[in-house]
Image (tube, rainbow, N blue to C red):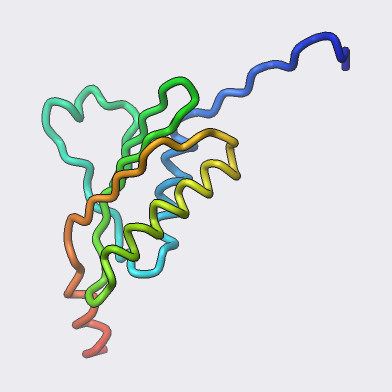
Length: 120
């Protein structure tokens, strides 16, 4: 390798960032499942979204919007903070990108799962 020549550029597909954010979110204790990124006219033009996650990348800074359904009897604030911390860590460590803001939206509480566990 020629030391006088600058290195090439690595690009990360937004789908990779979506997968990292989604899998990281699902691994946090208290998360039952992903919610839905709200629909409407704005969503039609938002390419970088999948179930429960929307990503915006501007100048190598990643902003993440997360929609989750939590298990009943969870500390919502603690789970929200842990989701933010873990997504920021995962993206920084795995792809080396800077993380801007991470907005966590708690869409619902999964009371059915708790009832099924008690009865099961």
